[in-house]
Image (cartoon, rainbow, N blue to C red; front, side, top):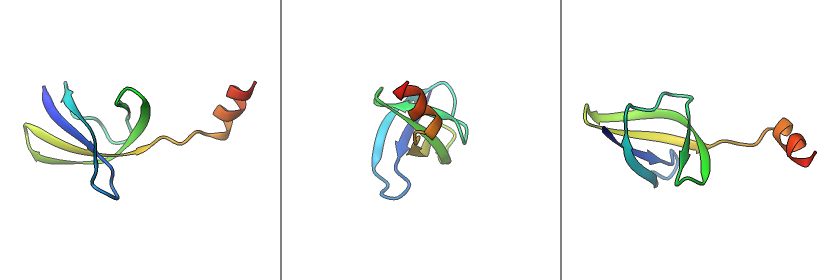
Length: 70
């Protein structure tokens, strides 16, 4: 298990932290705090046993909004 910190790329705020089986891939979507979906932008490894991952919230697309309204 690898300790992973999820951070905001603009503020460096730690949004979530947990142990993962593997380091999240760039472009992968992850759930933070079990409430909101984010996309991995890039990652920074301090060393093989720790990783910082920068994420941004996934924005709803027009298609999703139309589907939800139906």
